[in-house]
Each structure stands twice: as C-alpha cells, then as structure tokens.
Length: 233
Image 1 (tube, rainbow, N blue to C red):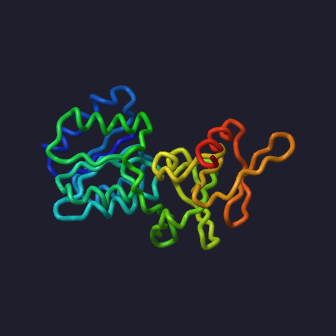
Image 2: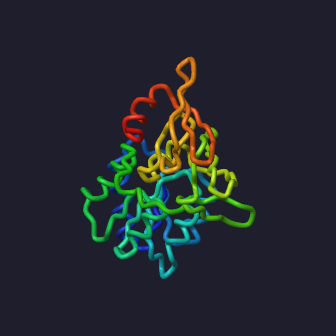
Image 3: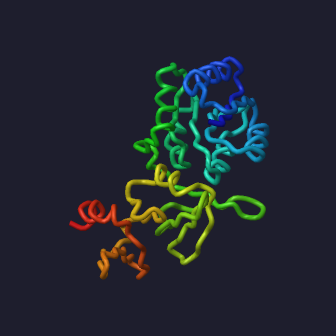
C-alpha cells in the first residue's frame, strides 16, 4: 500500500498516521503526510498511490480540489473531516468512505477494511468520472455512460452522445465504485443494464448482450446464467 495523508492539524495527522501503520502493517510500502492543498496536489501528480486520506478543510483551502483530481486517478480516497454536511457530495466523487471527526480507531479501521475487501455498499452515489484532457480535467456524468471497456490499467468510456473517452481507473476499480445498475458481463465489459435490450445466443454457446443502441457486447460464459436470472426474468 502506498498512502498519502493530507491533514493540516498536526495532532490528527499523527493519529491517522499511527492508525494507518497499525492497520496495514508490513503491506505498507510508503506513507507520506502533508498539511496543505498545494503539497497534496504536488505529491499526487508525482507519485503512484493506492490510498489518499483527506481532510476537506486545509487551512481554509477546499479539499474538493483534491477530489476533482482524485476521480481521474487510480487510487482510493477516504475523507476524514468534521464537515459532515459535505458527505453526500463527497460520495458523488467516488470516495470509499467518509469518516467524521471526531473518530476512533474502530471507525477508521472499518474504512480501511472497505479498501481491502472491495466493499462498494456505500459508494454507489458516485455521479462523475473524470477524464484528463490537455490543460485540465473534464467530469463526465455517470448517467451519460452506456458501457465501459477494459483496456489494461485503463478503461474506455462509451457515452450516450457516441463519444469514447479514456479513463485512468481500471475496470476492477470502476466495478467497485459504480452503482449497482452497472453489471460486469464479461472480463472486459461493464454495462449500464438500463441500456440492455436482450441476450442473444448463437451457435457454439456464444452469448451476447444487445444494447438499446444496437451495439452487441460479449457475455462471459460464467456470467450468462446469473445475468439472465438477475435482469431478464
């Protein structure tokens, strides 16, 4: 695990650092603590990370500037903040958990456990996926995504307007973050099932999913039965 803590209160930063070390133990590869928005953004741009623990109020600077960057990056984010009223908005950016201050070890450990178990039960409010463009980041609405194709450590987003965009998060990561309306139909495809029309079975036990726009996508043989029972009864 490669972890970054962004927290401007030294006492809390040390506490989060200690709890992070205790939980991840020998699996912790790097752990960096910074106390400002600028330092956080600078470190994110230069490092490969697995997890960011983020306060939303950083000496008056808005931690959501980090979240706008985070949605285009492959790492997970846990918010540790007293701004409880911002929790719903934070989840829209795909954070794994929102740990309100004051917090205890049990609550932070619970958030860490979500990371290691790929639990997405409370992150299905995500509304945006970010695409890096020259000169900035564009936020794509999840509701505009029809299906997603895996492309190694990246993914390709296929949108309602016919456009295709490259995204930095893997298919496995997006499967964890996206709402339950998105279904993994194949090792290489995630589909918004409200766009699904029917299953087509061809000779040789070949299964395909026909979308409302006529696109045909392969269905993995091990996924066909569950997909049929769940969505086409």
